Structures are given as C-alpha cells and as structure tokens.
Length: 602
Image (cartoon, rainbow, N blue to C red; front, top):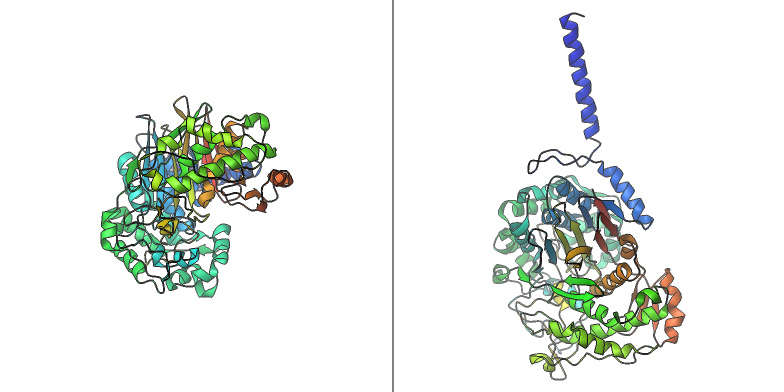
C-alpha cells in the first residue's frame, strides 16, 4: 500500500473514531465536559438512570449509589443538581442549582419570591449549621393587619390573595450566603441549567397543571399571573413546553450581581411596586424592608430518640421542637413491638402529636421577639411527665399546653394559625461527605398569586402569623409585628448516630409536615423501613383531635378501631413529599410516591 493510500485509510479511521465518540457522548446527559479540581468525573447515562430510578420508586425500593445522592421534588431539578455533583460540585452548589430550577418548573411551591430553612452538615469541621431564610413582616404592619374594620379576623383567602400577605423574600439571600460560606463551584456556573430551561422551555408537569386547574379563579385576578399560567384564557396543560424569558433575565442579573438586585436593585423595586399596587388588597412592603433583610445563622435544635440524635431548625420554625416533643413522648412505648398496623400505635402517636401541637400553639414563635423555652420544651423529664397522659387505651379527652415556668411564658395563650400544604424539599449528600436538608416555600399554592415582571411569584408568608394579637387579655406569641418572622412548620432534618449523619429528611405539606416527618422517622427507626418505604409511608395525622387517615391505604382499615377509642376519624388524601437519603456503606435515596420527585445518585 502506497503512502497516499495509507494516509487515506488513517484519515478514515480517525473520522470513524471521532464519529463513534460523538454518537456515544450525545447519548449522555451528564458528561465530563471539563475537569473540575484536577479530576474528570465519570460519564453515565442519565436518561437510563432516571427511568431505572422511577421504577425503583414505584416498586418501593431505594436508589443506591456510592459517591453522591440528590433527591428533589422534580425530575428536572434532580437532573440539574446531578450534573453539578457529577462535575465536582458539592452539596451547596447542587442545592443552589436545584432551587433555581424548582422556582421555574414548580413555581407554585417555592422560588425566589419566598423563603427557606437550611440544615447543613460540613464534613470538614464536623459541624451542623442552620440558616434561617424565613420572610419578615414589613415595618409598616400593625396588630390589626389581618382584621376587618370591625376587628374580626379576615378569612384565610381574604388575607392570602394580594399584597397584604407578602413578606420580604429570604431565598435569594440564603442561596448567596450558603454559597459564599461553603460553595465550591463558581457562582455563575450554577445558573446555567435554570437559564437554559427558562429560555428553551421546560415540560409542564402534571402537578403544576393540576394546581393551575385547582387555583384557576385566584390566578385570574392579576394580569401578569393570568398571562403566564392561563395564556389565552387556557391553563397550562401537562406536557406543554413553557418558556419564561423574564425568569431567565432575573437569573442572569442574580448570577452577575448577587442578591443585591433583590434587596437594593431593580428586581427589588419591581417587588415593592407589585406588592403596593396590588388591586383590592395592597401590601406594606417598602425599600427599607428589603434593605434591612438578613439571613440568620441559628443554633440547631437536637434531641435523642432511642440511640439517634434528631436535629433540625429552631424558631421561627416549630419543626424540630415539635418533632422532638412527639418522639420524646412516644419513646417509652415499644412501637417496634406494637407495629404499624395497630390502632394502639396510632393512638399513642396521635395523642403525642396533640400534646406537642398544644405547646407549639402557646410557646413557639420568632425567638428574636419571643423568649421560646426550647430546652424546657424538649426536656426528657418534662416529656415523660406529658406522656403520663397516654396511660390509657382511649383518646385523651382534652388537651392543654403544658405548664412551663419560664420568664414571659405565663403571659402567653394558645392560638392557632393556618399553614397551607404547599412547599418543596431538597436532600443532598455529596462525595466529600457534606449533607444538607433544605425546605423552601412561598407558603400556599402560588403564594399571594402576585407575579413580578421578573417571572417569579411572591409569597403569602405573613398569613402564617396568628390573625389575633391577644386572647383573653394574654399575648399570642405568634402575633404579627414589624420585622418579625412568622412561625413555620418546615422541618428540614438530619439524624445522627454515633455523631455521624445517617438520615437526611424533609417534606412539604404545611403544618402536616411535622406529622409526615415523624411518621417517616418512626418508620425508619422503629419499623426498619428502607428509605423509599419511609418516604411513601401511609399517614395518620392528628393535631387537634380529629384523626385523619390516608384514603385507600392500609391505615384506613384502622378507622373503626380508632373510633372505638373515642376519636372522630376522617379519611382523606395526603400530599406529603418526603425526600430521604440514608448514609451507610453506600447511599440510599427515596422520594415520596405522592409527588413527582426522584432520587439520583452515582
């Protein structure tokens, strides 16, 4: 063969090699497109992995991985976070990307117009840190903010829809602060997936389409909101490809200038204008409110349950306190022996929840305004005393808050406040051993229904305050005050054993979040469920006396037995969204079958 023919053959071989390599690479969604920190991540087929993981979820089996794991409420968010983790990013990097995508594909639940709580374990320092990105009340609010002219509390939806319910968003500041403290990748890199999806379009999920149908009337009230979710008068349908150029522009500004654009820049000005000019129900938000906003680093609330340390977010969240109260009250009982399919098990859990919610309603609020007796509320002796009320096989007839002698607490009175079952949750473990649990929200589905020109919805978080300042001459701890943060039930949780993180847990669901997380913890610890089984555990919830059992599940079969114990029992659907990771010799991920979440690991 002459030299010319050899050259031709060589060129053909090179072309074939490059063609094969190209055809191989385009089948992969996640690739080692560039080196990160001197190493090139492995390539894996994300499409095949996604299909496999969804089948595992359907069959009640966990996703198993060696290096890292992410579980979010939406496939697109999990995919985007997976790309970050697979190219050397850490848990914080992946969380930022996931939240930015969730604000686009699941706008009814969370976004840049809302707030969040982050519980973060840093492997290097072996420290657990919590960040409070909860919304704050405007300085102009008064005690009668949610009352009519006669002094009567507004109905929930009279208060929700419009500017009156909007607090200062905390999510943008939390994302930036978390990344500044612990992020690994460049800030700008974390926005790429969300910007691309916003510009090129994302498939409308079944959940978003269904939520639009349920909230059609309120979504029509404001033009910008209506034009986005009900284009040409028709709601977005499942599978439609939807773009959001305004959100893409917001993300570009956010990536370039940081959160200042929300608190002192053009986006902030638009937020204020949207709130104060809302027809029929304008709000009080002002420039000074945005400028004053800060994310607060707070001490985690931790307590032992059996041999496990249950840690989460302290006030203004009631999540960790109330969860640890419930677990502390039931701890004396052998729930493992009693078993799941037992009305006595659920009597114990249900009445323990009622006792804890009574304390929650009296004592827990923003600890910058109220002296919350955290240590006394989760004290083992106090909880054992409270558990004495369970020493019967019947429903406790009347529940009252426990007596806690602590400075101001004698002047407090029990009062309830409503929370809607929306919100989202992210659980992540990275290859470096860091772990995080973050729950974020705009409160009710579609928040205040106000959409900014920046392509995101604003929260209705102020309706998490009690609508009353006082009752019977005594102070309501969770009353509305300027710059105060409303009480929340969000419960991002990390469980430790032998000082090492073992479970990462959290869920959306309003005040039911507490019950959802408790049920999953008992499922994991007492009933030895795998993480997927625990994420999909059938729920029994009792906060205020009526026992709600999940329809069409095995727990609904306990209805008659619980009625014989004195409970009013109702069957209903629940919409928890538990996302759980277990850390052992491998990583195990599970996502609630009731929602569209998925675990991805490698």
